[in-house]
Length: 102
Image (cartoon, rainbow, N blue to C red; front, top):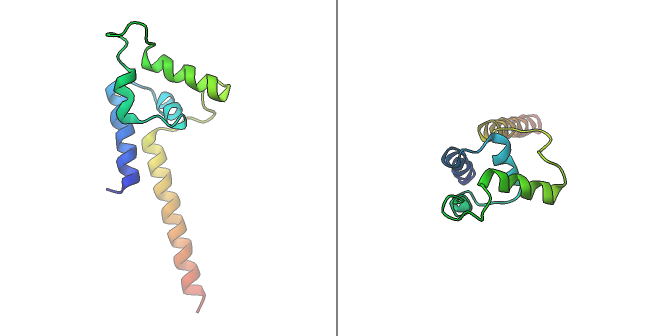
């Protein structure tokens, strides 16, 4: 498993562990949050002054980007699939150019 896929797997695990939607995961990724550290932020039961994690991510996203949600929401799995397709298309184009060059 490549490091990029490992990072995406961390986001998938965080989504399940903290019950986040695909949009909230995408917002957290765009905010450069660390999926391993979300547990520190998601303890509003023990620390009542904290916002719930879902609301906190949405609040920070609105504050930084000035819009309530991302324009196009894509799940982590779909994003990995799209990246793999693009990577394979680039490889095929490179192979095609290499065979046409000589």
